[in-house]
Amino acid sequence: MAEADNIKDIFAPTEYTAMINLFLSQNKHKVINKHVCEIGTGNGIIAANTAILGAARITVSDLEKAALSAARSCINEVKDATQSIEYLHGTLWEPYDNQVFDLILANLPHFPGENVMLSGRLPTWSSGGADGRKFLDPFIEGIARHLKRTGLAVFTHNCFVDLSETHAKMETLGLTMTTDYETLVFIPPVKAAALTHGVSGYGSNILNVGDYSFGHVRLAMASWPESSF
Ligand SMILES: C[S@@+](CC[C@H](N)C(=O)[O-])C[C@H]1O[C@@H](n2cnc3c(N)ncnc32)[C@H](O)[C@@H]1O
Image (cartoon, rainbow, N blue to C red; front, top):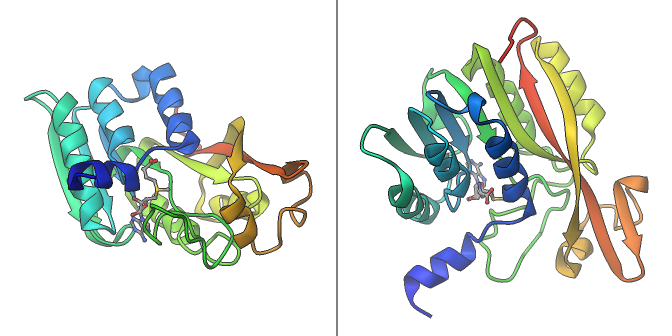
């Protein structure tokens, strides 16, 4: 396999990617002329969609340099000359200094399992530590520092990672959070085997049908209470 194909494969999108993209496509007014940030951009497809939808500025970051190359190729295919794109390398909010954004997007690794080794993926793709919060919590804390008062943060949230804890953290930060959009995502056997409490340990947040398991996933949306974004 050519190296470019291999990179595309490693960073191939998922239903989580699609969930954010559907929201963006149905809410173009939240993107047009805005300054967008995507942490953990991977393939760059979500950020590229915001370019298509008319974002004015896009700042993306990832822990993996290879992801930033993949994102650059993807975004370059669709961006126009007036759009400014910035690529940052590093963990979570670390490379952002004190920049603030209209729209913050993320589909971060937050699968509750220490060793989620998916064939064809980098180890950094999905594991969120035992409770799934290893990256989620510092990401949430950073929203308060990097979201404009009129802005919106949209991120994927497994329901089998404690949503009430996320609500409580948002409230402590003074942010309002809603989780109106929900879907079911297939959990492949290798991920199911890595789940900290197993597929039966998360109540109705994981649907088990015979040998197959599906996780409930929501889109979390955070904003400041006074925002009408
Ligand atoms: C589940 S993938 C999502 C990729 C892409 N945004 C999508 O939705 O298809 C998670 C991405 O986050 C990156 N990542 C993992 N840990 C990170 C961290 N601590 N800081 C920034 N990015 C991270 C991974 O390299 C990967 O590209």
